[in-house]
Each structure stands twice: as C-alpha cells, then as structure tokens.
Image 1 (cartoon, rainbow, N blue to C red):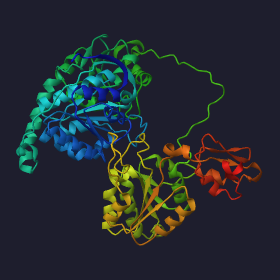
Image 2 (cartoon, rainbow, N blue to C red; image 1 turned 120 degrees about the vertical axis):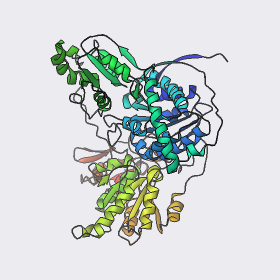
Image 3 (cartoon, one colour; image 1 turned 180 degrees about the vertical axis):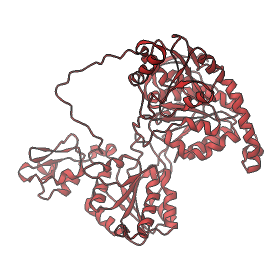
Image 4 (cartoon, helix red, strand yellow; image 1 turned 30 degrees about the vertical axis):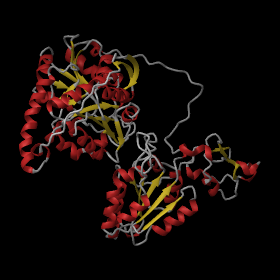
Length: 603
C-alpha cells in the first residue's frame, strides 16, 4: 500500500497519539489528567486501537502490563501525580520486563497550571531503573514514541517518555507517513521471569542493573541527542522544552541537547564538557541533570541560578544566567540580549477574572449548605475545589484524589479523642466527585465502615469527569470508544461496602439538601449522601433563566453569597446576566423578598 505523506500542525499530545498509532500500538490506557488528557482522546479516534479510561492510573498501567505481555504494543498515559498512584506496579515492571513494547507517557506540569504540586517525574525513571526520553517539541514527540517502543522491545524494559506542559499543549509542524506497523508477538509462559516471589526477584535485579549499563552505551548513539557547537566559551546542557528556551535566550551558545536523559550518555557529555571551563545546565524543576553531571566530577552551574520552582521561559533563563556567564567568560551580557517588550494599548483596565464555578454548577449549592452548617470539610480535587474561595469558603483541607475520605476518617478519630476539639466531633464530612470516588475513594469508604467511623461522605455525582473536559468513567454507562456499557450503581456499591444509610439529594434544592445533611451529619454511623445533578454545561439549554424585579429588590445581597458569576450588583440592586444564567433557581431560593423570578413567570 502506498503511503500518504502528511504535514500537520499538532500539539505534543496529538503527536504522541499519532506516533503511537504509526508504531503499531494496539492497546492504550489512561486516566484523564491535564496536561496529558488529549493523548488518549486523539488515539481513540484512530482505527485498530483499543483505548480505555481506566478507573485510576494504577489500573491503567496494570492493564498495559497485561497487554504488552500478551504481545500488543502498548501506551499508558497519565499526568505526573498519576504516576504516584501507579508507582507500585511501575517499580516492579522493570524486573519482569515486557514482551511487546510498553511506553509510559507522563506529563509534568511546571508552573502548576492545573495541578496541586510541581513534581519532577524524571526521578521515577532513576528509581525504577528504566530509560527516560524527553522530546522538545511535537515532531520529536511523534518520533520518540516509536523509538521508545523499539527500545522497550530490544532491552526488555518499559520506557518512560516525559512531556512538560509546553510540549503537551504547544503546536508545531509534524511531517509523517500514514503508515502503521503491525506488531503481534507470541505469548510465552516464563514464571521465573514474570512472577516476582522474592527468590525470582533476587535474580532479576542484577539483570536490571546490567541492562542499565547496556542502555548507557545505547544512549551514546541516540539520534535525538544533539551537539551544537557555536561559542567556544559558553556550553549549555539541557533537554526537553528548555532546549528552545536556551536557543532563544543564548543563540550563540554551544548546546548539548539531550533526548536520552537516563541513563546519561556519559562519553558524549564528557566530550562536550572538554571544550569549556564550566557547563551551565538549564532544566525545569529539580536538578536532575545537574546532579548527574556533578556525580561525573564536572564543574556545572545550574540551580544556584535557575529556580527550582515555576515554569521557565526564554526571558527567565536569560535573566538568571546572563550575569554569571559574563563573570565566568567575559562575554558581555553573557550573550543574552534582553528582548524588547511589546506593549499593547487597551481601552481601559481589563477586569480581573478569578477562578470560579460555572453559573448553575450543582456543586455550588452543596458547598453553600456545607459552609452554612459550619462543618469541617475534607475535599478532593475537582471543579468543586473552587468552593474554597470566597464567598463560599466551604473546604478545610484537600490533598489528592481519594484522600477526602481518608482525611475525614482521620479528623473524626482525632476529634473523638480530644478535649480541645470535642465540639467538632460528629461535624466532619468528606466530599469528592463521582469519578474521584471511583478513582481512589472506594477503599477509604471501606476503611471507614470497617473501623466503625460515624462520619458522612458526600459523593458529588455530576455524571462526568468535568474538570478535565467531560470524559466518561465507569459510572456514566459509556466507554472512551463510545460504546454503551454497564453504569456503576453508586448507591448499590456503597450499600455493598456496608453503608447502611445512602441518600440522594438534588443540590439545586437547598432546603432539602440542608435537611438531609443535618439528619446524617452527627449520626452514630457511616453514611453517604449522593449529591446528584448533571454538570450544567451538559444541560444548560434545558432550563429557564431568572431575572430581578427591581421594585422588589431590597439590596440585601443574600443572593451574592452563592458566588454565582451570573449575579452582580448594579448600584444597590442585584442584576442577573441572562446570557450566563443557567436557571438553577438557587438565588431565588435565597431571596427573601422574592425579587428573583423565572423569566416565564414575568411574561
């Protein structure tokens, strides 16, 4: 079949998907998480690939392990904090190896655009003893997937492909052939290699270490490592998107751009270093490369100048290194020319746009009630986490997915044995979304029932994974491939765990929601309240909107306590932006004079 040559502008995530398809990936698994989500969404549109949203990242990797052992090239994708969830199988997978290739794509988020921490996932490659590849743009992302799978099969190891937010979401031109490899390897039993009882594992660890030595030699000829000799006075070592920052900030500098980051191509690094008195290392987050170069005995300058927090850019790199490079080399300004700022005249000052839940968001009503009841609320990660902000201020603590349940148990146990906090006994609730409950909350609820904890868990069931872009999950009745499937019954699941009281509320009904919560909170049992209403962005067109009757508005501002962006003050009166209003009626429920009315009632 004649191949068709294509040239497209692709994001890094799209390029990974296209590269996986071209390389013959037949199974792909993920849990949605920005900045990695689009990889599976794009791959699921291509024929001949089984794609799934797994309940969490650990399950995704375990499915991927089974698929690669079964002879199918496999891709598993997740964001950086997801790799923490998948760490248990990840750390043993290099011992058992693969059959067909397996690449784990992890997307780090420097700058925390949509994450709770700045984690450097490169250390997971070092801990597990696997090769680590880092593309610097979409074209490399496309090509490195195939290279990773080939490495995986040749060295019998998983490969970690690390992206950063700018690589995942920035677009660049990718040229490729619409050809697809066919990889279908036979399955073979090999219990001594694949069943990690201690006796087998002891034999496999030395194999892993020898493999790392072989991979270090392989890294020397890796085509995505590149030496660019320019200045004989300034040498910079970098990788990933930072390569582009370096090239823009210091266009005359000599650069060693690494694509194979672990294990390092030491001979290449030493040869490059021999041309300079000192090397400068530019990398985001932790000093991963810098530590490795210093361990080789090289004189390097990195995190003493380049910050360990936040996202880098060309200007930040230039400002951080220019002075020290000038001192070291005598090159004026270090070779950095400060870019001219482009100013744009705007008609007046733009208003601030703080993060806020959407008009009509069902989470708003639930957290308004929780705040009103003055409860201690341990939460999870989702759109609802924005209710920590004024005016609702309805959350006390939040760490990671699933932790809202376990933290609630811990808080309740602490309060139950305390004299200082005795008034908070029975005042704890845990809140988490439906997708989050399936991801990591079920085991916490089992623990709560098992340890007889009188506490209420609230599952915010909006029928989707809203925060990352409306992906399906086991509770929606649809798969990533668009097929109808069994929809997990949350009520039946909670009862099967042993929860005696499972109740469902409509969070748009503030009075009923408050009544149910008052009854359940403080009872002597574990209870679950399911706050169920579909995400407003999925149903908005079905509802009428509300309007303020000026003559009846007293300016009491009670409606503003919801923090709904559709309601503002005009003078001393409330006003509803009907283009934003979702018709939830929560503001009307709070309006004592009855000035907020459904538009149809005013005609």
